[in-house]
Image (cartoon, rainbow, N blue to C red; front, side, top):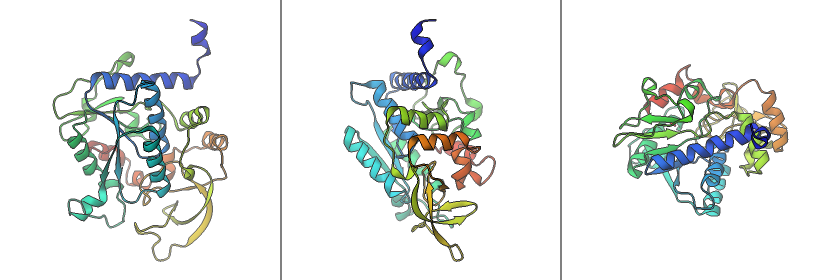
Length: 302
Protein backbone atom coordinates (compact mmCIF):
# COMPACT_ATOMS: atom_id res chain seq x y z
CA UNK A 1 0.00 0.00 0.00
CA UNK A 2 1.37 3.41 -0.91
CA UNK A 3 1.83 6.25 1.51
CA UNK A 4 -0.77 8.29 -0.36
CA UNK A 5 -3.42 5.58 0.12
CA UNK A 6 -2.71 5.35 3.85
CA UNK A 7 -3.22 9.10 4.24
CA UNK A 8 -6.65 9.08 2.60
CA UNK A 9 -9.55 9.82 4.93
CA UNK A 10 -13.05 8.38 4.82
CA UNK A 11 -14.27 11.61 3.24
CA UNK A 12 -11.58 11.32 0.54
CA UNK A 13 -12.82 7.83 -0.34
CA UNK A 14 -16.47 8.89 -0.42
CA UNK A 15 -15.59 11.87 -2.59
CA UNK A 16 -13.62 9.66 -5.00
CA UNK A 17 -16.50 7.17 -5.20
CA UNK A 18 -19.03 9.93 -5.97
CA UNK A 19 -16.79 11.43 -8.65
CA UNK A 20 -16.40 7.96 -10.19
CA UNK A 21 -20.20 7.47 -10.22
CA UNK A 22 -20.76 10.81 -11.96
CA UNK A 23 -18.20 10.00 -14.63
CA UNK A 24 -19.58 6.47 -15.15
CA UNK A 25 -23.14 7.73 -15.60
CA UNK A 26 -22.11 10.46 -18.03
CA UNK A 27 -19.96 7.97 -19.92
CA UNK A 28 -22.76 5.39 -20.24
CA UNK A 29 -25.84 7.59 -20.70
CA UNK A 30 -26.69 10.24 -23.25
CA UNK A 31 -28.91 12.76 -21.42
CA UNK A 32 -28.14 13.09 -17.70
CA UNK A 33 -29.72 15.64 -15.37
CA UNK A 34 -29.23 16.42 -11.68
CA UNK A 35 -32.22 16.74 -9.35
CA UNK A 36 -31.60 19.93 -7.38
CA UNK A 37 -33.91 20.83 -4.51
CA UNK A 38 -31.62 23.40 -2.89
CA UNK A 39 -31.24 21.10 0.13
CA UNK A 40 -27.88 20.14 1.61
CA UNK A 41 -27.59 16.79 -0.18
CA UNK A 42 -28.27 18.20 -3.64
CA UNK A 43 -25.89 21.09 -2.92
CA UNK A 44 -23.12 18.64 -1.96
CA UNK A 45 -23.98 16.54 -5.02
CA UNK A 46 -23.61 19.57 -7.29
CA UNK A 47 -20.27 20.42 -5.64
CA UNK A 48 -19.04 16.89 -6.40
CA UNK A 49 -20.35 17.00 -9.98
CA UNK A 50 -18.51 20.24 -10.66
CA UNK A 51 -15.36 18.67 -9.23
CA UNK A 52 -15.81 15.52 -11.35
CA UNK A 53 -15.68 17.44 -14.63
CA UNK A 54 -13.54 20.50 -13.81
CA UNK A 55 -12.18 22.47 -15.53
CA UNK A 56 -14.83 21.66 -18.16
CA UNK A 57 -18.33 23.04 -17.62
CA UNK A 58 -20.93 20.76 -16.08
CA UNK A 59 -22.13 18.44 -18.90
CA UNK A 60 -25.76 18.44 -17.73
CA UNK A 61 -28.37 20.77 -16.26
CA UNK A 62 -30.45 20.83 -13.09
CA UNK A 63 -34.08 19.80 -12.60
CA UNK A 64 -36.18 21.10 -9.71
CA UNK A 65 -39.73 20.07 -8.86
CA UNK A 66 -41.32 23.16 -7.30
CA UNK A 67 -44.31 22.31 -5.11
CA UNK A 68 -45.23 25.95 -4.56
CA UNK A 69 -44.68 25.27 -0.85
CA UNK A 70 -40.90 25.43 -0.87
CA UNK A 71 -39.02 27.46 1.70
CA UNK A 72 -38.20 30.91 0.24
CA UNK A 73 -34.64 30.68 1.59
CA UNK A 74 -34.09 27.48 -0.41
CA UNK A 75 -35.42 28.91 -3.67
CA UNK A 76 -33.24 32.00 -3.25
CA UNK A 77 -30.19 29.79 -2.70
CA UNK A 78 -31.08 27.68 -5.75
CA UNK A 79 -31.25 30.76 -7.95
CA UNK A 80 -27.92 32.11 -6.63
CA UNK A 81 -26.20 28.79 -7.36
CA UNK A 82 -27.60 28.61 -10.89
CA UNK A 83 -26.50 32.16 -11.65
CA UNK A 84 -23.03 31.68 -10.10
CA UNK A 85 -22.20 28.59 -12.16
CA UNK A 86 -24.19 29.44 -15.29
CA UNK A 87 -26.06 26.14 -15.19
CA UNK A 88 -29.28 25.41 -17.09
CA UNK A 89 -32.24 24.96 -14.71
CA UNK A 90 -35.52 23.24 -15.60
CA UNK A 91 -38.41 23.69 -13.17
CA UNK A 92 -41.37 21.29 -13.05
CA UNK A 93 -44.20 23.21 -11.40
CA UNK A 94 -46.77 21.44 -9.22
CA UNK A 95 -48.95 24.62 -9.05
CA UNK A 96 -49.30 24.53 -12.86
CA UNK A 97 -50.63 20.96 -12.66
CA UNK A 98 -53.07 22.01 -9.94
CA UNK A 99 -54.22 25.05 -11.92
CA UNK A 100 -55.14 23.11 -15.06
CA UNK A 101 -56.63 20.12 -13.25
CA UNK A 102 -53.98 17.53 -13.97
CA UNK A 103 -53.52 17.21 -10.20
CA UNK A 104 -55.85 17.73 -7.25
CA UNK A 105 -54.91 19.39 -3.97
CA UNK A 106 -54.76 16.96 -1.04
CA UNK A 107 -57.04 17.60 1.96
CA UNK A 108 -54.05 17.96 4.28
CA UNK A 109 -52.45 20.62 2.05
CA UNK A 110 -49.30 18.59 1.49
CA UNK A 111 -47.94 18.57 -2.03
CA UNK A 112 -45.00 16.30 -1.32
CA UNK A 113 -46.80 13.18 -2.53
CA UNK A 114 -48.15 14.77 -5.72
CA UNK A 115 -44.69 15.64 -7.05
CA UNK A 116 -44.24 12.31 -8.82
CA UNK A 117 -46.27 13.08 -11.95
CA UNK A 118 -44.56 16.44 -12.70
CA UNK A 119 -41.21 14.75 -12.05
CA UNK A 120 -41.90 11.86 -14.46
CA UNK A 121 -43.33 14.21 -17.10
CA UNK A 122 -40.22 16.40 -16.90
CA UNK A 123 -37.95 13.35 -17.24
CA UNK A 124 -39.92 12.17 -20.29
CA UNK A 125 -40.01 15.65 -21.87
CA UNK A 126 -36.24 16.06 -21.41
CA UNK A 127 -35.63 12.45 -22.57
CA UNK A 128 -33.30 12.11 -19.60
CA UNK A 129 -31.80 8.65 -19.21
CA UNK A 130 -29.71 9.30 -16.06
CA UNK A 131 -31.24 11.31 -13.23
CA UNK A 132 -28.87 12.05 -10.34
CA UNK A 133 -30.55 12.07 -6.92
CA UNK A 134 -29.26 12.88 -3.44
CA UNK A 135 -30.75 9.87 -1.66
CA UNK A 136 -28.57 8.17 0.97
CA UNK A 137 -28.88 4.65 2.36
CA UNK A 138 -28.77 5.80 6.00
CA UNK A 139 -31.92 7.90 5.57
CA UNK A 140 -34.60 5.24 5.25
CA UNK A 141 -34.84 1.48 4.63
CA UNK A 142 -36.22 1.67 1.07
CA UNK A 143 -33.28 3.84 0.12
CA UNK A 144 -30.96 1.45 1.96
CA UNK A 145 -31.72 -1.39 -0.44
CA UNK A 146 -31.73 0.63 -3.66
CA UNK A 147 -28.77 0.30 -6.00
CA UNK A 148 -26.49 3.20 -7.00
CA UNK A 149 -27.72 2.78 -10.60
CA UNK A 150 -31.45 2.20 -10.06
CA UNK A 151 -33.35 1.21 -13.20
CA UNK A 152 -36.79 2.73 -13.81
CA UNK A 153 -39.09 1.26 -16.45
CA UNK A 154 -40.77 3.13 -19.30
CA UNK A 155 -43.39 4.38 -16.81
CA UNK A 156 -40.74 5.65 -14.40
CA UNK A 157 -41.52 2.94 -11.87
CA UNK A 158 -39.08 1.01 -9.67
CA UNK A 159 -39.20 -2.74 -9.14
CA UNK A 160 -36.83 -3.81 -6.32
CA UNK A 161 -36.85 -7.38 -7.70
CA UNK A 162 -35.24 -6.19 -10.95
CA UNK A 163 -32.22 -4.60 -9.31
CA UNK A 164 -28.88 -5.45 -10.84
CA UNK A 165 -25.81 -6.57 -8.90
CA UNK A 166 -23.12 -3.92 -8.46
CA UNK A 167 -20.05 -5.96 -7.64
CA UNK A 168 -16.67 -4.24 -7.35
CA UNK A 169 -18.27 -0.84 -8.09
CA UNK A 170 -19.15 -1.91 -11.64
CA UNK A 171 -22.31 -0.16 -12.80
CA UNK A 172 -24.46 -1.45 -15.64
CA UNK A 173 -26.01 1.47 -17.52
CA UNK A 174 -27.67 -0.57 -20.29
CA UNK A 175 -31.34 0.27 -20.72
CA UNK A 176 -34.07 0.13 -23.33
CA UNK A 177 -35.61 3.20 -24.98
CA UNK A 178 -37.91 4.99 -22.55
CA UNK A 179 -36.24 3.54 -19.45
CA UNK A 180 -33.95 5.62 -17.28
CA UNK A 181 -31.71 5.33 -14.27
CA UNK A 182 -31.87 7.13 -10.98
CA UNK A 183 -28.23 7.47 -9.99
CA UNK A 184 -27.27 8.07 -6.35
CA UNK A 185 -23.67 9.29 -5.88
CA UNK A 186 -24.22 9.80 -2.12
CA UNK A 187 -25.65 6.33 -1.43
CA UNK A 188 -22.89 5.36 0.96
CA UNK A 189 -22.70 8.69 2.78
CA UNK A 190 -24.30 9.39 6.16
CA UNK A 191 -25.77 12.65 7.39
CA UNK A 192 -22.63 13.10 9.48
CA UNK A 193 -20.40 12.53 6.43
CA UNK A 194 -22.35 15.19 4.53
CA UNK A 195 -21.90 17.76 7.28
CA UNK A 196 -18.22 16.96 7.75
CA UNK A 197 -17.72 17.37 4.00
CA UNK A 198 -19.63 20.68 4.02
CA UNK A 199 -17.29 21.86 6.77
CA UNK A 200 -14.14 20.64 5.03
CA UNK A 201 -15.06 22.14 1.66
CA UNK A 202 -16.60 25.35 3.01
CA UNK A 203 -19.86 24.75 1.11
CA UNK A 204 -22.52 27.43 1.53
CA UNK A 205 -26.02 26.31 2.58
CA UNK A 206 -29.36 28.11 2.99
CA UNK A 207 -29.41 29.79 6.40
CA UNK A 208 -32.33 27.72 7.68
CA UNK A 209 -29.95 24.79 8.23
CA UNK A 210 -28.54 26.72 11.22
CA UNK A 211 -30.24 27.76 14.46
CA UNK A 212 -32.45 30.83 14.08
CA UNK A 213 -35.59 32.30 15.60
CA UNK A 214 -38.76 31.26 13.73
CA UNK A 215 -42.50 31.19 14.36
CA UNK A 216 -43.67 27.57 14.42
CA UNK A 217 -46.51 25.44 15.69
CA UNK A 218 -46.69 21.88 16.99
CA UNK A 219 -48.36 19.09 14.96
CA UNK A 220 -47.83 15.33 15.26
CA UNK A 221 -44.72 15.87 17.36
CA UNK A 222 -43.04 18.22 14.86
CA UNK A 223 -42.47 21.98 14.72
CA UNK A 224 -43.98 23.18 11.43
CA UNK A 225 -43.72 26.62 9.88
CA UNK A 226 -46.99 28.47 9.09
CA UNK A 227 -48.00 29.15 5.52
CA UNK A 228 -50.63 29.17 2.81
CA UNK A 229 -50.44 25.38 2.67
CA UNK A 230 -52.83 25.14 5.63
CA UNK A 231 -51.18 25.69 8.94
CA UNK A 232 -51.79 26.34 11.73
CA UNK A 233 -55.29 24.96 12.20
CA UNK A 234 -57.72 26.05 14.89
CA UNK A 235 -56.31 25.08 18.25
CA UNK A 236 -52.69 24.97 17.06
CA UNK A 237 -50.76 27.67 18.88
CA UNK A 238 -48.14 29.71 17.06
CA UNK A 239 -44.98 30.28 19.08
CA UNK A 240 -41.45 31.51 18.43
CA UNK A 241 -38.58 29.05 18.95
CA UNK A 242 -34.91 28.71 18.18
CA UNK A 243 -34.84 25.98 15.55
CA UNK A 244 -33.02 24.69 12.53
CA UNK A 245 -33.84 22.26 9.72
CA UNK A 246 -32.09 18.93 9.18
CA UNK A 247 -33.76 18.40 5.80
CA UNK A 248 -35.85 20.64 3.58
CA UNK A 249 -38.78 19.75 1.37
CA UNK A 250 -42.40 20.78 1.13
CA UNK A 251 -43.16 23.11 4.07
CA UNK A 252 -46.30 21.15 4.88
CA UNK A 253 -44.40 18.01 5.88
CA UNK A 254 -40.93 19.21 6.90
CA UNK A 255 -40.44 19.82 10.59
CA UNK A 256 -37.81 21.90 12.36
CA UNK A 257 -35.84 20.73 15.38
CA UNK A 258 -35.07 22.86 18.41
CA UNK A 259 -31.37 23.60 18.25
CA UNK A 260 -28.67 26.05 19.25
CA UNK A 261 -26.26 24.92 16.51
CA UNK A 262 -25.31 28.08 14.60
CA UNK A 263 -22.12 26.83 12.91
CA UNK A 264 -21.09 23.78 10.90
CA UNK A 265 -18.97 22.48 13.80
CA UNK A 266 -21.90 22.81 16.21
CA UNK A 267 -24.20 21.00 13.77
CA UNK A 268 -21.66 18.16 13.44
CA UNK A 269 -21.63 17.72 17.22
CA UNK A 270 -25.44 17.70 17.27
CA UNK A 271 -25.78 15.21 14.40
CA UNK A 272 -23.17 12.89 15.93
CA UNK A 273 -25.23 12.69 19.14
CA UNK A 274 -28.58 12.17 17.39
CA UNK A 275 -30.23 8.74 17.47
CA UNK A 276 -32.69 9.51 14.64
CA UNK A 277 -32.01 10.16 10.97
CA UNK A 278 -33.16 13.51 9.65
CA UNK A 279 -36.09 11.92 7.80
CA UNK A 280 -37.18 9.94 10.84
CA UNK A 281 -37.06 13.03 13.00
CA UNK A 282 -38.54 15.67 10.74
CA UNK A 283 -40.49 14.28 7.76
CA UNK A 284 -44.23 13.68 8.17
CA UNK A 285 -44.48 12.00 4.75
CA UNK A 286 -42.36 9.09 5.98
CA UNK A 287 -44.66 8.46 8.94
CA UNK A 288 -47.59 7.34 6.81
CA UNK A 289 -46.46 3.71 7.15
CA UNK A 290 -43.46 1.43 7.31
CA UNK A 291 -43.45 1.12 3.52
CA UNK A 292 -44.42 4.74 2.73
CA UNK A 293 -41.16 5.60 0.99
CA UNK A 294 -40.94 2.31 -0.91
CA UNK A 295 -44.51 2.68 -2.15
CA UNK A 296 -43.75 6.18 -3.45
CA UNK A 297 -40.50 5.07 -5.03
CA UNK A 298 -42.26 2.22 -6.85
CA UNK A 299 -44.53 4.85 -8.41
CA UNK A 300 -41.59 6.95 -9.57
CA UNK A 301 -40.87 9.23 -6.61
CA UNK A 302 -37.34 10.50 -5.93
